[in-house]
Structure formats: C-alpha cells, structure tokens
Image 1 (cartoon, helix red, strand yellow):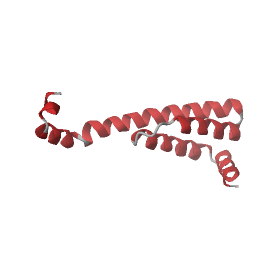
Image 2 (cartoon, rainbow, N blue to C red):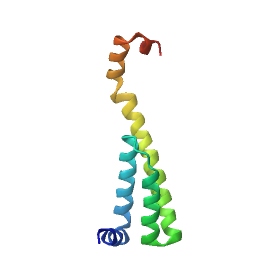
Image 3 (cartoon, rainbow, N blue to C red):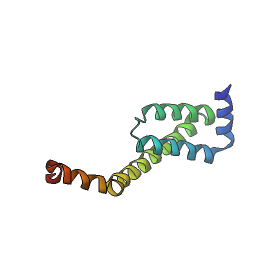
Length: 99
C-alpha cells in the first residue's frame, strides 16, 4: 500500500517530510491552488505518523510556514517578474495606465 509506505517514510524522515510538505504549500500558493485540501491532508498524515499532539503541532507549523513563504514568493513574482507585462498593458490600454 502506497499510503502506508508514505507514512513509514514520514515517521523516519521528520525533517525531509516537513520540507516536502512546506514545498507543496509554497507551490500550491504560488500557482493559486486552494490549500484547504493540503491542510486537511497534512493534518491527517502528521497525526497518523506522530500522534495527536505532536502531529497537529508539526502540521500547523509546516502549513503556516508554507503558506507564508508561498505568499511572499507570489508577491515577489507579481511585483518584480511581471513588471514588463504591466508596462505593456499600460501602453496598450489607457485605463490600466490610470490605475
């Protein structure tokens, strides 16, 4: 069963599993996928792997950090990487220039 293999991997590799969860949240936030399913899934996975107390704590910290880092990366992407695109729209459409 793939799920039991993943649970065993999470039990052995706490740090790598947390970074994998963090990376999934960052990616989901950057490409605008709602993170509700990931939050519920990570809560379930961590609770099954580490028990109720420690599992909820690790899931909460990794979800919070992943969503915050994803929001920062999304802001940086929108602020600096799409600047030329906004300038092009401002030249083409005058209402964008007034905004």
